[in-house]
Image (cartoon, rainbow, N blue to C red):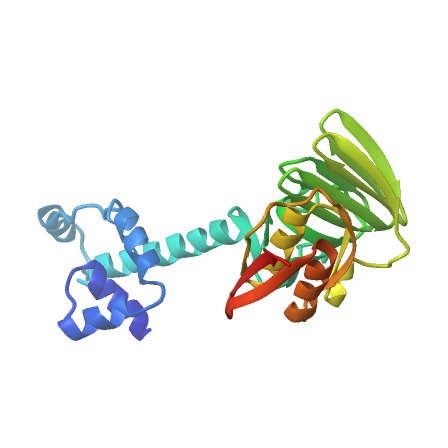
Length: 299
């Protein structure tokens, strides 16, 4: 009740300095300012005193009406509350929802249908809650693992292609020019440029610069969920990019890159071992300049 009273005084520009400071400290003050802009357009009909007096005198045995001075205040407070509820409803249902996993982190969250998503480091997803059961569409930048609840079509779009499923578990990775998809359960349909293929349990496909690589997998979920990165015929720049995302570090190579491709696993919870694997594989010497900066030099 006190908050509504303060709001009413604020709308009427009748606050003391202390009251003004109090309402500005409210977390919702920015919303109140937007609402004030629109509520200012709401007007109460002018009060015609002469007409009211004339009506009173012309009628007998009718008690005179008392119009409180705070009527205008309460009307505007009611308008503020209605607009605030409407604004909140729109923001919660129509606005785009974005989930992030910053470098060195993983993020797990549930979609409106209780489908589960795990974002790998340096990734983000956008989707809209409104009418979700009929339009289950997401925009992915980076890598994510999906455990999809059964229902209508579920589609993941990336800059390189899209994956459509019903109920299944799968992993999608879109980094630079490389597009990796692995199906762990059920079936997924993959669209890449003018190609469309179906993956079933244990199948994986990679597209890079127009080249398609088909692989099989015996894992029940992505290796990165258990603090390991699995690479298949990956070049050194892509491997170093992934290590930088996982550990939130900067890596510089003081020599030319080799064309040798790497297939293997690198831990995401032990930077020293990860650097040793790269150093041994590519004949490089890692040097830590500081906590978050590493240099590779030729041995």
